[in-house]
Length: 208
Image 1: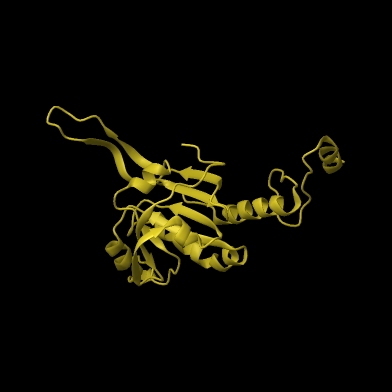
Image 2 (image 1 turned 90 degrees about the horizontal axis):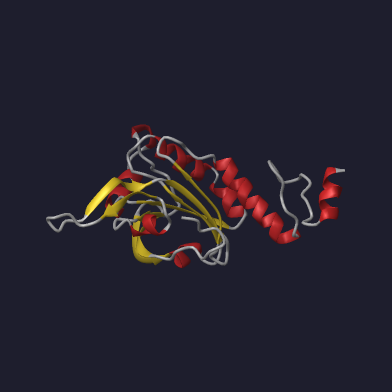
């Protein structure tokens, strides 16, 4: 499912804030508070690769905040399981100290609407039962949503493949540079490097 250039799907769901508080019926708009956001999905609490990603995002949280970008996590675990994981020390496999919000997508509708649910519902069988094929959890989906609620970047990794947080920061930098200057950013562009004007003359100037 391609969401680039489209309005990010809204939701109304329970969210854990600051590692200790459950707030009910939060929307994406509530969580963004008028800012851009990195919304990322991870498969499961109390697993292996997932906490490494959550910690890397926490360690880089001030960098995102300085760019006026919220960080929001989402999995199909319950809010109670989120709280249990948040209350477990890091040396025991927990994420105690994570401060950004964790969404409890228990119904799996958010993961489905963002196209990252690792499986599908199938037709009803002869016993009038709804069947599910695959894994009823989220892939490692990552979405950069601008301040107007439009998706500007998305990527989906399979379960064994952890994200590169530096690349997410670079994506934010590129979008914000483009918004400010109108220039487009070539391959491997980083802050401080020359960009390109979206004209033939601009391209020629860049390569010359």
